[in-house]
Amino acid sequence: MIKRLPLLLLLAALLLVGALLTVLEKEPLAAEKAMSDENGSGRAILAGGCFWCMESPFEKIPGVISVVSGYTGGKEMNPSYKDVSAGATGHTEAVEVLFDPEKVDYAQLLEVFWMQIDPTDAGGQFVDRGSQYRSGIYPLDAEQQRLAEASKQALADSGRFNQPIVTEIVPAGTFYPAEDYHQDYYKKNPIRYKYYRYGSGRDRFLEQAWGEDHKE
Image (tube, rainbow, N blue to C red; front, side, top):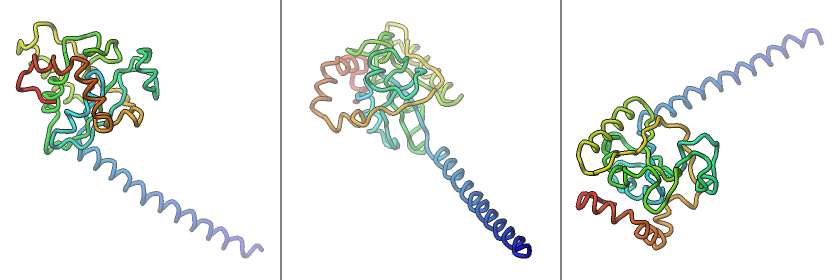
């Protein structure tokens, strides 16, 4: 028994070393994949009232990979639509846009963003009232912050709107995806979507503000 003990210890040590090597081999691969995802695509978080109406314009842009409806800007974790729509969470309806920087850049996304909202309305957007429908840009880094501020100032200087531009620019917090039934609502329920969008007054406002430049 005494002679066999060192052999058992050696086998155990070999098994432990093998397990550690396996972990070390996997971790760099996972890290490399994460870096590749982060460096290979851009991400933008924008709020323009009802997120149903913000998905379609961005998904039509060449270079946009995906658009997800969700909630951001508040402190409550994992909010539900019921909670957010009640206006008690501090969150606003927003979209997360994943894009290919080689085909479209953040500044171009901001140009499209301004053409989807009423940037002078601090109380919501169109028929949807309350801070849960406020407009906002949520930069993920210093460069996005700079571009957002410059874009907002350019719009203000353009004189297109007679009132102050009140859309908030706040460093991004956690983005929480909305429930599945909200995703791609304009595709799943085209008739209801078009009826809601027209009835909200959004399109009439945007056509008056932007004319032929506006594209939904």
